[in-house]
Length: 119
Image (cartoon, rainbow, N blue to C red; front, side, top):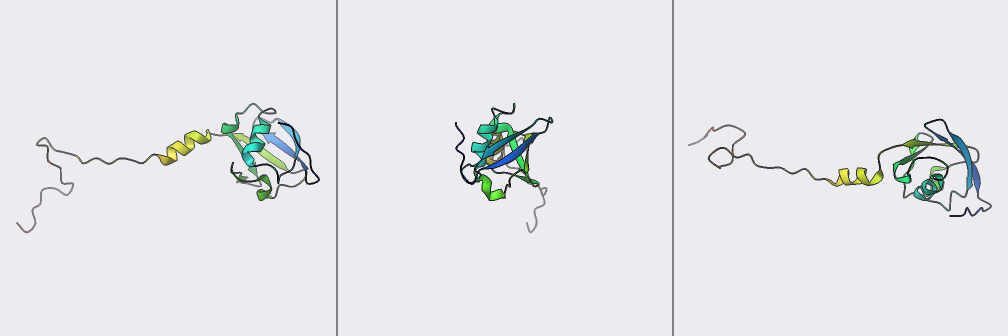
């Protein structure tokens, strides 16, 4: 994917959690965070799905345009390794199941005991 520079393109510094640093020039109004991550893969040894971008204390969301975060010329975006997005989404979508406990007779157990009020 070739970078298309525009008059809105800015030069941004990237710093990884292992201390690596590099610059990249791009138009923040033309890229989503996910697209930016895909470009960063060539510079850093973290897969895009495991990459987290942090700017001004905020984790950038994949579906947002980069310019939503107000990234400025010469500022630094931190790149950290995190859990893969798909695994996190799957974990969030898991619905816990409930089961009714049964006693040895096969009838449902009463969690409040066998008090037969009013009988």
